[in-house]
Image (cartoon, rainbow, N blue to C red; front, side, top):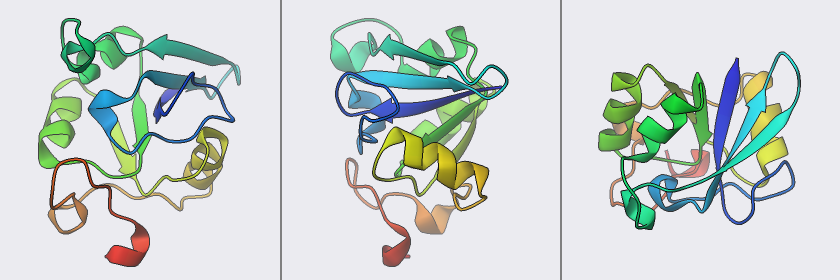
Length: 126
């Protein structure tokens, strides 16, 4: 299974989770079976390219996305591309993966989605 995390800089396990999903410079992809890491650049329309981030992740074989917070549009686009999403990730990519494995991240619901585009919500804000 491949898990993608929007990364704030160059990607990798030590990079921080990017708060704005669509404008993440990179996506760190962790393969749960091989425990390998792949980093893909965000070449979506948000970064001057083509297609949307969920389409890029689908092409990379991603099954799950872990992120801080998202809006309904991203939830719908990921769902349309067959990608499951969990929110509540913060700190580093490695910590997001560890939190997900421990069952500490949760599926987004209307009540815990971003109220304004670009602002992630933390567990303390719910």
